[in-house]
Image (cartoon, rainbow, N blue to C red):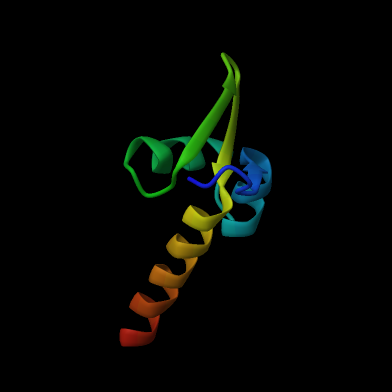
Amino acid sequence: MEQNERLIRVWRVAQNLDVSRKRVYQMVQEGKLTAQRLGPREMRIVESSLTAFISQRNEKQMMF
């Protein structure tokens, strides 16, 4: 992750992907998204990982 990489709140990612916040946390655990911890109860998603995930998902959908 670059130093000036944009970080996005979990609830915003959930909104963009139309999933629950819990699912976003699961996706981080599964390695599908990259996250940065800001404290014991704060996590942000790295924007580049979200963009890559969305692109990959769109490519798979176009195959079918």
